[in-house]
Length: 252
Image 1 (tube, rainbow, N blue to C red):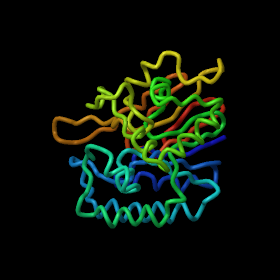
Image 2 (image 1 turned 30 degrees about the horizontal axis):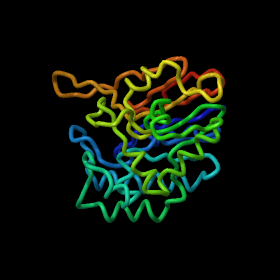
Image 3 (image 1 turned 60 degrees about the vertical axis):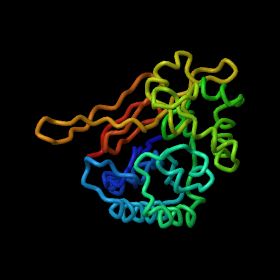
Image 4 (image 1 turned 45 degrees about the vertical axis):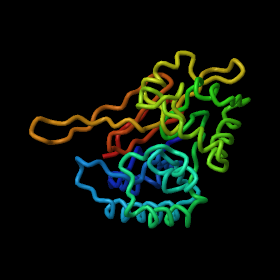
């Protein structure tokens, strides 16, 4: 299976390269974080809104192929309960909150916390065995896990679990959630994500910005972090993932 993976958006338009390759792929998966642009990038909140509007139109044109995941920067707009429960929201726009929230509300059916294809788990930040253990979740298999993750935004308890942040991200929880986990948590999860003694699950996620600042003020994209089980993609680049070989290539 060929899947176009689109890492954290944050108002950027690199995702548009997917349009040129949509006919030759089986799925297009957005890893979330559509809003809250970085201050060092020349992208305004209104730019991000216009960009999100284009993404929604694109997804509706190919509903059988497109998947939209939610990230930690989306949940405060997506859920008023989450916004009230969480302690802080990085780069969250108070001025545009109501407008953006209505955009999510109007198309809420399009969004998911997790998705599975060919035995590969797609989330915004990755999922660790330690986090699942800490919230007393014991799925029987990957499909069961995906169903449980997608149900989290429907309850206050689930929303609190989504706002679990470990010390790696300045939090106090034992582990970060599937929208807050740090790459160090995933790399340190030695056993990986397993079910009843099964082989460890392969995962694809974003969440940790991979760019470097040049001395002259420019910005250079870093390389994805990848192992036999993990692919962390968050460097302003669209990728084509081959699920059979678990290999990727940039779509430029």
